Image 1 (tube, rainbow over the protein chains, first blue to last red):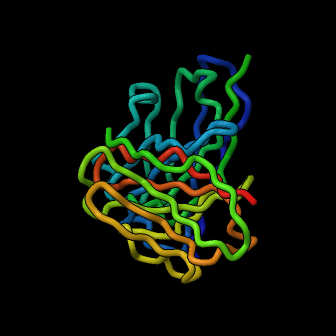
Image 2: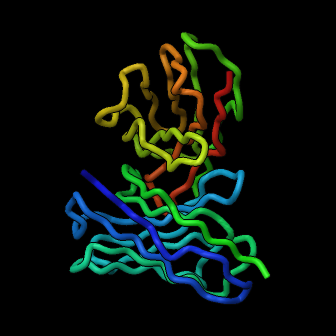
Length: 115
Length: 106
């Protein structure tokens, strides 16, 4: 069955960096667009970034453009999110999900940005 | 960005009730809409894709309708496990966007 497992979350000071990973299995990863979605505590869902199946096309929410970088490794079936210049408002559970319809999600990893 | 306006933001209902949630897009998104259910502390789960297609394994009491700018999620007979928050999401264009959510409570 489809599995997506996020890792890499934790507590980080404002201005620092963090790298999230999403390990996948159970589907043809190399043909699927992939996405990161986040949810701040007690808030709704916010799409963060997406990447095409080849990795050539990348898309970002305005809130993270220039600070976050999405990437993928189609040989290892993994997705990454490099987060730089983190801000307190980036505090959230970060989920990876597949396809534009976000038809499968991981369990999420919590990122807390605080001094 | 395409704005999605979901209503109501919350509702109270009882087991067996018919529940309807609406989602209005700020521009024509054809059928590029999905509906999700999220229970507390859990990841969202897709219910409906392409506005009206039921995801495999989702109970048939869930249905979606609409196209263009106006969409509806209907739960025909509310069950105890359906008390949760529901979100619409458009995938017609980037950036992908979500509605604000509807919390279904007892």
